[in-house]
Length: 267
Image 1: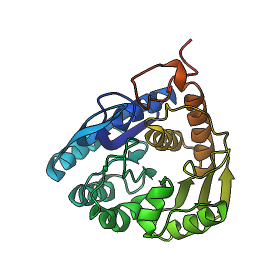
Image 2 (image 1 turned 135 degrees about the horizontal axis):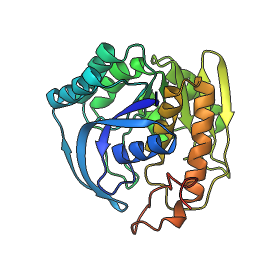
Image 3 (image 1 turned 30 degrees about the horizontal axis):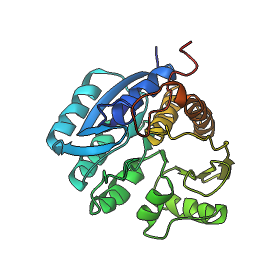
């Protein structure tokens, strides 16, 4: 049977982020993908111009429909938008996915600067959603918002914040260091077995739209295949590095273009 994964996230009509990026990532990693929408956005590579948030009732109806019929091997949670949706997702995960690997990417701000999560929803995400997660994948600004502290500016601070994030309930934390002023893109994986650094070269490109979505989706895809957290995260980071390295070949849009999800499949 083919591995399967479900993305619970917002829509990006330009195809670079959100559920569109997740489906491309699932496919590239050999996993059958499904989606539950939390919000519709009007956005492209240059920014977000409008957001239409779906109701918790309709989100729940989507979740129930998928789980009533289709085998789900892993879940990725992306853009949530507000507290009622966060509560609905958490409740749905408790009912349907308590035994499944769950990757939560606490998306708060789009690449162009648009806020994708209400400030008052941070508490709901922290208290209700993060404890459902097998892995959470915040970047440095998101980690600072979750911990209500200043953004990490060094590897030492990243280590401290990764340990603090673990106390919020997830089994593991992948703290992404792309915002760090460094020649490398350092991420740190924290779990009850310790800390592991994953470094990759910083690739000079503006085309990084949807990188967070794609990384978390790739982790979910690997977990759906039965990989351990450590192997899944390392494999996903290697995949994303390749997708970024080949992003300029796509020439999509006039702003922050998407990564090349199918870099090793298209000639």
